[in-house]
Length: 171
Image (cartoon, rainbow, N blue to C red; front, side, top):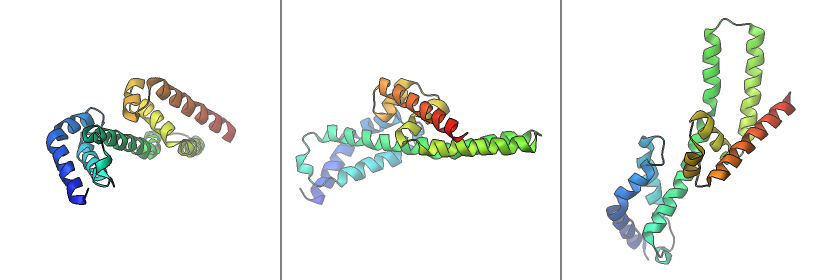
């Protein structure tokens, strides 16, 4: 199949399943402004498939690609705002007139926490952020990451355990 045929296949999928794909993404993305970018990435990945003839069910393949793009997007978004923790704590601390020694100790503790957090695997960081920062349930986390509810629980427990162990070892 030529690139033109692949493009025709994608155009057909957009026409027949575009609205369904947008609904699928809207139900799974926290920020609806990300949906057009995710949709575009799905279609770009579909265009990059080397042998489109080997796809038995283009519709099923489209949603499989969409699920993979969503998982990568969720992991990326969950990891990005980790620096916000330092800003929030710094803003709160600067408003209060506290002891400079306590501020230094708190800053060092925050640095250790940030370093420890960055050492977690992307999946563990994502589950931790989705649970603690975003307040999502285990079912919602599992749907976003494409894993089971028990695995989402296991990932969070593993993240908490690793954070505790690394922070205790640093002290």
